[in-house]
Length: 362
Image (cartoon, rainbow, N blue to C red; front, side, top):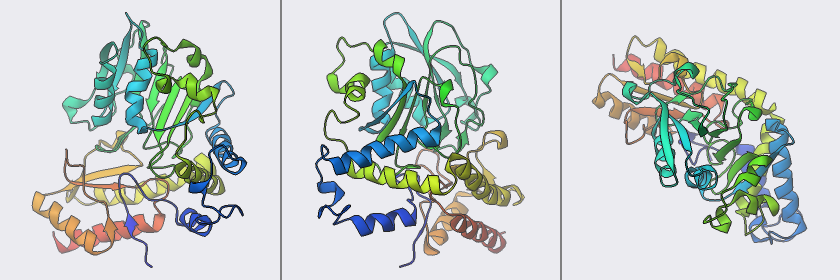
C-alpha cells in the first residue's frame, strides 16, 4: 500500500515504523496473549510502558528533577480551564499573550476563574507575527503569564523561549513540543496534546514544577481537576488512555533513535526550508501568511493569487496524493502541517508539486 503524503494539522502523521511496530504487537503485546488495549492499567506489563514513557519525556526534554510529568486526558483544551482553576487566585490577574485562536480560547476559559488581561496581541496584524518580548506588558503582580508557542492556524512560532518572565510562565506547546530543544526551566508549567508530535489523540502531557502542586486552590476544585491528584498516583488515579500512552512511548523511542530534540530540530528546519524556499522564490504566486521572522517550522500557511487558484491547487494536490492541505476554516488558503513524523520525502514531493503547479498556472 502506498502511504499518503499526510499534512493533516491534527490528528497528524505518525512514523511508519512506529505504526508497523504497533501492528505486530496489536493482538499479542509482550507475550501476554492480549492487546495492550486489553491490559489492566494496574498490571506490571502496562505500568512498564507507562513509566518508560515518563522516563523518556524527562530524558528527551531534559526535564529538571524539580518537575513532575503527568499524563492526563481532556486535551490541551481542558488545560485552558484546569490551570486557572488551580492557580488564578482571588485578587490576582493572569496575563495572556494572544498570538492566535488557541490563545484566545485559553484567555476566554481563564476568565471563568478570575481576572485576566492581555499582555500583548498581534490580532490587529491578523496574527502574522509573534510579539517581541519587549512588547509584552509584564507586571510583577501577574499571577502568571501564558503563551502558545506555535500557532497552527496562522503558521507562526515563538523563535526564542529562553526569557526571564519574572513571574510564573505557562505554555501551551501542543503543536511544537519535542520538535526542538526547549528551556523547560523557564516555565512553571508546559502542556501539550499528543496528537501532533507525540502520538495519537487521547493523552495530554503536562510538565509542572513540583512546588506548584502545593499552591493549588483546592477549595471548590473537583478532585479530578487537581494536578496533585494525578501526581500522587503517578497519573494512574483513574484509568488512563492506555493505548494512546503506549503509542506515545513508541513515538518517544522513535524520536530518541533519530537524534532526540536536536535531531528533530534539524529534520524540521530542513523540511520547512524546502517549502518556504518555493514560497519566497515564486514572485508572489504563493504568499505566506506569517512574517519571515515568525515563521513556524510546524505549519506552513500560504495563499495563492486568487481563491480560484487556491481551490484548484487543493483539488489537484488531493488527486496527487497530498492530504490535509486545506487551511483552517477561519482563515482559508492552504496549510502544510509538517510535524516530526512527516517525512522529508513528503515535503520534497510537495515542493515539486508546488513548482509544477506554478509553472502550469502562471
